[in-house]
Image (cartoon, rainbow, N blue to C red; front, side, top):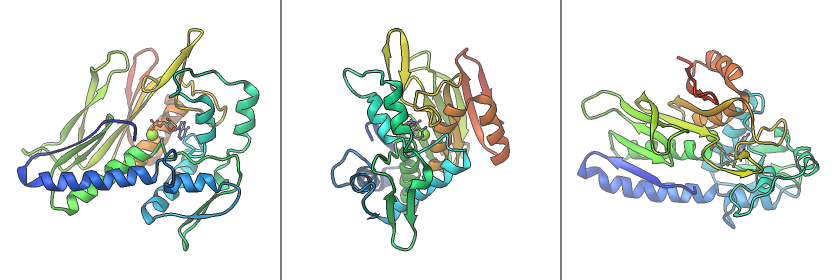
Length: 288
Ligand code: AMP
Ligand code: MG
């Protein structure tokens, strides 16, 4: 998943479980990696506009969730932005700002209804050959939750799974109190601007400081607004969502980053969600 991952357990007896969950994590991460030749998501993309592709149950469930969550935030989270992410190519050593025309052309194909799912056959079909499925906005949260469920199944009572700053907490601290999870300060590398209490839940953060390039004095970051195809400019620099549902926390953190403070707060009230926002001015706002 292009990031450092750690699983912390608190008893010697749990070490073997942690090691086996690492291999579960690795294979799940490979199956949803669109750049890995032969992976489920790679095959879906290779067959875009041509034919449905059968995938594993876990991958099918994640893609269904991604579609459902996209619809519940009015499309601000959209797993079909892969071709636009490729166009922007934030990972490139020499990234370029694309032209309006290139962006508009690819954005024209992005429509969540073109992600066609068949529950019975576990197949996924992209109805337009220009579409590229990208689970980068939901994968880490889903993987954290998967790891946590797997650990619990193996009898582990408490653990912290950290996937590049996206933290999933299993159980509580040894003294029974909730874990405290630090939220990275976008303005100071390595520092935290706040901590949150967390028990059997994930804390997932989206931020414009996580991946970006600069051109002519402008910072272009990796979270794209599906309404424009350009990096979202909603006045936020960081959004964290805390939820027992890691996939939801991840998708919503990305969506909230796109939507900005006011609309996100409305969704938090609607869905009873815990979120922490930092604005460009450095103001911290919580939904709870
Ligand atoms: P996150 O770090 O969870 O906010 O996800 C960002 C990653 O998700 C990016 O690196 C892209 O791969 C992808 N992405 C970018 N914009 C969006 C969006 N609006 N909806 C869903 N995925 C996105
Ligand atoms: Mg996300």
